[in-house]
Image: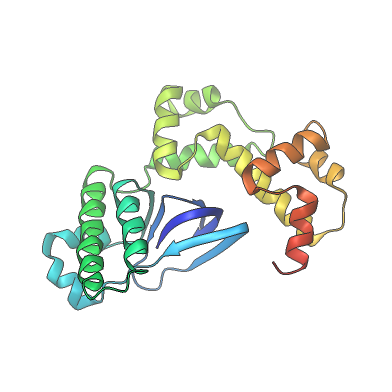
Length: 226
């Protein structure tokens, strides 16, 4: 699965990731996956290699052989081109899609060999950040706890989750805000206070930046089923 654009979340193998342009989920077997989109929606491209096709890839199959998540570059560029080819009424389009899909397999294999998965350091940093709650924790304190520099933690964390630690904290707050807006009738101001925002205006500014709509508009759209 390759996210072309939009904003939302992806819950895969018990872990939650930000779904935005560039997010790639490689799913092998029956890995549980759940996607949710914000009001603008998410646009995905799904590529499937049957076992025979994987065998034909030879060493290029390495990047597709296990479940993992990453934020891609070269692979996403090729995915955009596949998306364009799918709109072309041309007898050569299927060949173009096949070539580009195998190009994505190549890019993922190179990525798997360079960055084999979510680094344990990133997982430990995420655990510390989540334990600190919505008030957040300074990256300097996280780095001290992990015995490395703040710059190294930020670099490894961003490679794993597509966000800096501070942006990750804000994303978690916005995701919780979305859940509270949907499952309760509490005021925007009360929700903002619960999540550590200085006031409703501060909360609304950040919420709009992440979702493209105000908290009130988000609630109304979701209740209309749009």
